Length: 303
Image (cartoon, rainbow, N blue to C red):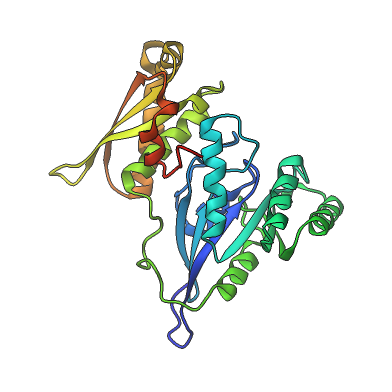
């Protein structure tokens, strides 16, 4: 929506928290109208905080899409959960997103307990309501509101857009009066090469059925503008084991070619320019314990 000169400008940060795969990234992408955070049927795909920036009437809303909050087992898990809670501290409005299909599970209960412990008042969003019986939905809403301190409850489908405009309007009306922090056309604070690397990682999640995507990372090695205006992008996929490299490459290089073509098409669509994408796969057994990787994702290695 365009700017109305008779109204005051508003701007602020909205932290989306919740269990893995609740739909936080889908909400962010839906509002921004472009891919700024990867989406996958697999859980725990978002590794770092992603800021998606958009405008609703006279309000610039900056969504902080946080990693899913779960019981951490590894260093990377702990860093991701720590990142999610740090996003809460920086936010003007905190939104707990709950997958209505999964219901009131242990992970969501633990998040509500933490919100209560820290006296954080949040907005409750029940997502994926298009696939849930209304009676069950009302019972779930009552149970969640009985457990937590929620100022408002919204029932939406981020995928279809059902009821989501009411949620956006509430945020726009309740963020503080402030000049906008970013130019009107900016959709994310993530550098283009990192966004492209995340799109490659998303394709790896989609094409690889095994647990391999959780044991790999994608590093942009080169992002170079060519004389004809196109971009040459070189990225390295680091895995922990030789057999993982073999699977990603596929027979005769078929799998890596398929992943590369799919990623390139989406990167070109998002950037609206021609991209020459080159993918390499290397084995680095200890990449998950490399402080430099955590720094690149804005994660705390010592969490």
